[in-house]
Length: 257
Image 1 (cartoon, rainbow, N blue to C red):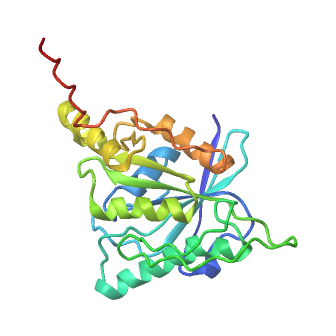
Image 2 (cartoon, rainbow, N blue to C red):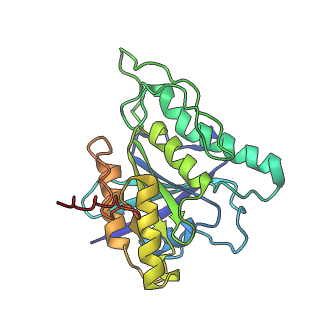
């Protein structure tokens, strides 16, 4: 399948975000979850800059993706949460960018093309709560932004509080148009992998896609997820977890006669 990927810009404020109405899929995760490496693996080129120092990226990096006959869309790399080089002030800057990114769609009355989202109380570290969004306009306005999100979590650290809170925040911010991906699955041995995936799906009560930017595992499935979110986020439904809970309920012993 033909794939074209190009860097658009690094946005420092809401004024730099896309305004043409194309769909957007935002990648969200902790600073060391491997977003840049995963982007490079997906597009098969060194498009995103990687760094060994977590928290170095302070801008919203925007990429234009055209894949096959589908409409082009933006893949958006948001700054990571949980680690901010530059201390509290830098963390506040990260939060302001995230708030501006997800909150701006409410200005045209839509979030994930639906809108009508109230104030989001739960939010991950460095991400302030979204403001209350206005009702949908009665008259035609600017092109509606279709924004979906994918939360990336490190397969080696399932169930971190910051990741769990980010998951809740994102589900409200984009009204469920969100997927869940576990990165760095190649770092785990077989037994560790089974245990981690079981815990992840139990904690999030959602299916989790394991991927590796090193081996390429799960990249085709990740493209399918991205295409679903980019082309029709409203019809995307998060599948239920396929791994049973780690502690299934025990059957009661039979009664003795």
